[in-house]
Image 1: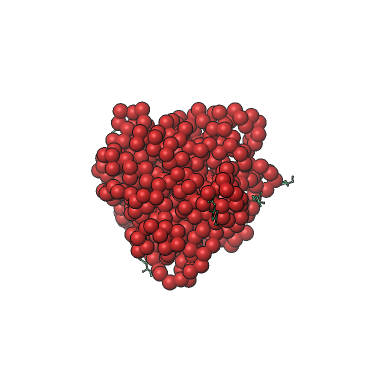
Image 2 (image 1 turned 60 degrees about the horizontal axis):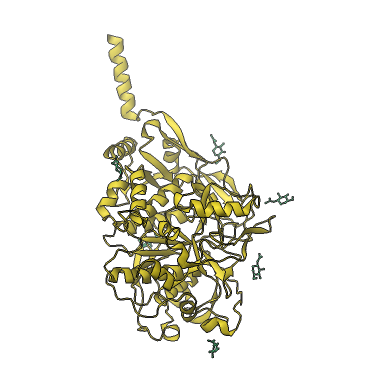
Length: 564
Ligand SMILES: *[C@@H]1O[C@H](CO)[C@@H](O)[C@H](O)[C@H]1NC(C)=O
Ligand SMILES: *[C@@H]1O[C@H](CO)[C@@H](O)[C@H](O)[C@H]1NC(C)=O
Ligand SMILES: *[C@@H]1O[C@H](CO)[C@@H](O)[C@H](O)[C@H]1NC(C)=O
Ligand SMILES: *[C@@H]1O[C@H](CO)[C@@H](O)[C@H](O)[C@H]1NC(C)=O
Ligand SMILES: *[C@@H]1O[C@H](CO)[C@@H](O)[C@H](O)[C@H]1NC(C)=O
Ligand SMILES: *[C@@H]1O[C@H](CO)[C@@H](O)[C@H](O)[C@H]1NC(C)=O
């Protein structure tokens, strides 16, 4: 009796001093850091990490099923988008998940703040020493040999076994920052437009709104619907400064500008040295094409991640902001990307689920596919042994936009395309992609994942867009040009739908791969470039291809396909 009582006291004393160690299990790991990174030294134990925790959503399957219900033209629920609260019911963790993760944190003297309206994202700070103990991790400093980029990361981390099914991921841990940066705009000037009478207002060496309106039949008449909107995202200290309306759209009120939204310390300085090519391009070709559709510029800083500027953090901030709005803009365009190989699979899925949530709200999420052909975002800096899919274009719940040039249009060689290594091919593109795989036969076998989600979905002109930047005028190229162009087309179609009392287009792909397909200009020539030892990436052909997707917009045909 006496011995037992003493033992009990001993255990009690121990558990007051330190929480009982739970059984742990490796949750995410990678065998080595991404190419170019090497471990250079241990991270000092007092370095403070700001970690994001994603909790398992209570009904991810239901969210995705609902997404297809409201986005598939043949479905009875087509266009019946859900409210913020209804979507949050799917995305919210169960109360058991929330309480068990919070209990574990407080046992360890930690307290998390909630980042998302649905409660599925938390943020918690702790020193490296604590994180190493808590997650059986080994946070170290990794350095990229080419760019010198450094990041504090671990190659593996564990979570208590009893939190499996509750805690989805901890970030940043096994994801790495892209050492080359996230901006896909290329500065190459292709000077590709032939001056011939068949090319209308495009018979100059610079692409202008007038050229795109002519090429795609985009109307110049102002949008009329209330409550329509288009969001343009801005990252890595890119701020818009100017519009070019007086020169390129004299028919639009020259004072028309964007509404500025700042997230996480994002700013909008209006001094010439801070003009951003990407931000100027993206705002000029939405304001300049989606006539009178209100444009919101979302500038995301990186105050939340003291350790690093990782692209996924910026995307998460943006998606959570959009999800928290009661009436989000119906279109969001992003001309930045990353490569899948730097991102953890759990993180890719968690972000993709946020885009599914936006789709259920009726938002069309568009991303530029990237400017590195099949070598991810960066040709020729990145070498590769297999093709590198870009991120987040591999997420099946968004629309990825590739690039074309010349008239008649042909695939432009920098247009990124290929197949995700994380995401399986979604059913809506089964036929289109299977036809393309049959066309490829053995070409590039072993260099890509034939079961993966194929991208891009669509394309638009991507070469020599005339922009005003830093008080000067000049051409820029990249799929960065294509995404705002396609987004503007979607926005103008939404305007007509809303005016007719119909819902916005929402998640586009189930429509694009069915009744929308014949309303696109199929691009059947050209190819994208490869990487290191390989000479050719993918070739464009009849139907869907991994360079230009289903093709470029034809506004009149798209209207007809919608019965407008
Ligand atoms: C942890 O990483 C350091 C380098 O940061 C390395 O020296 C050490 O061996 C690693 N420890 C374990 C247990 O893997
Ligand atoms: C998940 O969502 C689906 C579709 O709305 C629904 O049928 C199902 O009952 C939900 N499951 C749970 C556990 O809430
Ligand atoms: C081509 O551009 C010139 C001005 O550079 C213009 O006068 C002419 O009308 C254009 N041609 C066509 C077919 O639009
Ligand atoms: C972001 O962080 C910087 C540096 O700590 C600080 O000066 C700035 O005020 C912060 N901005 C916002 C909007 O929180
Ligand atoms: C390219 O080929 C060379 C020679 O065959 C080989 O040593 C190298 O590893 C290859 N590089 C890649 C990235 O595959
Ligand atoms: C891409 O196409 C442009 C224009 O034809 C050409 O100048 C360039 O060399 C091509 N790049 C590669 C890597 O093939």
